[in-house]
Length: 209
Ligand code: BEZ
Image 1 (cartoon, protein in one colour):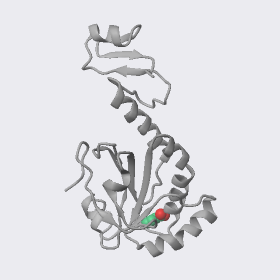
Image 2 (image 1 turned 180 degrees about the horizontal axis):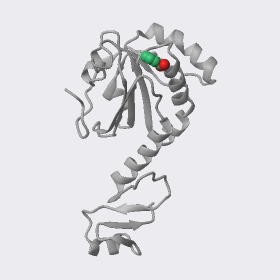
Image 3 (image 1 turned 30 degrees about the vertical axis):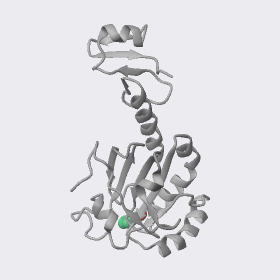
């Protein structure tokens, strides 16, 4: 069964490069990003893992823990970490699950047999403090992900969880936002004074803080 938006992220216990982790206990009410890569000691994956490590301070600022996964064993991940440091300059500073028995991959539907029978695709799950799935993404093996985009999505998710707003295309933190269509004009006048009506269904306001 695929894991879909709004579902409770399946819990699991798995070996990682930082010891055995029970997922819900490990994330402990924080945001988390669980992401898979196809295989250790491969070129695109090496650049991706380094990119995530280099952005750790940004994920920390957003109260978000990162955890990687492939079907390679933990011992392989540990050996590969040296290459990631050599190539990208970043020490891997988050746990990587060794999912050799494919338990987590199957729970999260990370193996797409028409892409590969045996390897995980590049899946991403953003999971909220309430353990609900807030975003899913699937990339093919040939395309490395843009992890800065995940920071942008986190900014949007965290803002829209707090205020009755949505964020427009290509929005970045600090830019104007859209008032949720569930908010009446009367309520919008008190909640977002001075908002601009571009269309009756498209009302724009400065980002609330
Ligand atoms: C890569 O990371 O470059 C890669 C991984 C698995 C299959 C193909 C490419």
